[in-house]
Amino acid sequence: MDLKKYSKSNFEYAKEAYANLGVDVEAAIEKTGKTPVSIQCWQGDDVTGFESSSGDLTGGIQSTGNYPGKARNIDELRKDFELANSLIPGTKKLSLHAIYLDAGGKKIERNEIEPEHFKSWVEWARENGLGLDFNPTFFSHPLSASGFTLSSEDEGIRKFWVEHGIKSRLISEYFGKELGMVSCNNLWIPDGFKDTPVNRAKKRDILAKSYDEIFAVKTDDRYNLDSVESKVFGIGVESCTIGSHEFYMGCAMKHNVLLTLDTGHYHPTELISDKISSVLEYMKGIMLHVSRPVRWDSDHVVILDDELKAIACEIHRGGFSDRVHIGLDFFDGSINRIACWTIGARNMEKAILWAALEPVKMLQKFEEDEDYTSRLAYLEEIKTLPFGIVWDEYCERCGVPSGSDAWLKIVKQYESDVLSKR
Image (cartoon, rainbow, N blue to C red; front, top):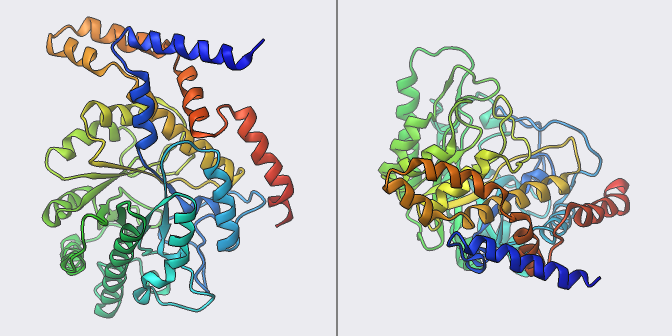
């Protein structure tokens, strides 16, 4: 049997099945391939980073597990990601934290970081056809030990972190200029109280002042897009997060920056998919941090569940592709870390393709006509359309393996040859 011919006939069948509902499969594949997905570097080394004197992970963040083969330096992290990159279809970016600087082993304070400390990352990204995003690192540092950074009442500490935030924005702008793909600079801080405070307002006044100073330095939106990220709580700051959701919505609107929606940073009954159109009614854009919260902000590897598909569908249905920047944010040290990258990113790509294949015009016409019966009937019917065949074709066109039997074999061989010897 000519398997290639058989596969092609399957794909023609799938195209026809979707075309019957008014969906152009070729256009869906093209759109998916052009949608950037920003993949988090910190999955590869459990959020350790490469500062010369890296300490314990703090700020309410935990990476659990001790699977063999964690990247120990920049070269290993890059080599590991290059393998993952070869197994993930589509347009990709790598999201860096400030602690992943390349300073040649020198101690560089975070308020002194410069584009030159990330020059090798830019060169590497260019060679691998990647964009870069950035994140200032407000945790795992002696000056974050009190639990307060940008909201600190110690003026010296506050100024240090303001300077770090400004430096990060300039590095992000440098990424965008050098690589020709806008860089998103995401600001998240761990500030908060373990027990109930009696003066939340003072801390939030200080935090607002810090952002006024950070955003007073202008950057070019063609190269850098700033984003601010909220959270319900963190380990050790369960009672009050200074940068709450309401605070950051106001901050984003005041400074005309993006609002980051992290799928793990809300109450368990809240859904990011429901928030996208509401936020975009008033803001210019969104940065997504897609993870998988299990009972809380546990940052499990992304799976192709209903919410992931709903997030992608909301972006597609609303025509928000140019205003929503998709990033991943999970870290699991209990299983093969390269497989984590691959599984999570491929599932995000699957969700984007799933959304692009949805017969939106037909479904929205049912809704406009108040024909909710047909809307529900077709929403259920499309679940059994031959999506997997289109996914296989998409992977083939991107030059990556389509099935886990193929890509997992490559990862397992790399584990045997490289990771097991670390």
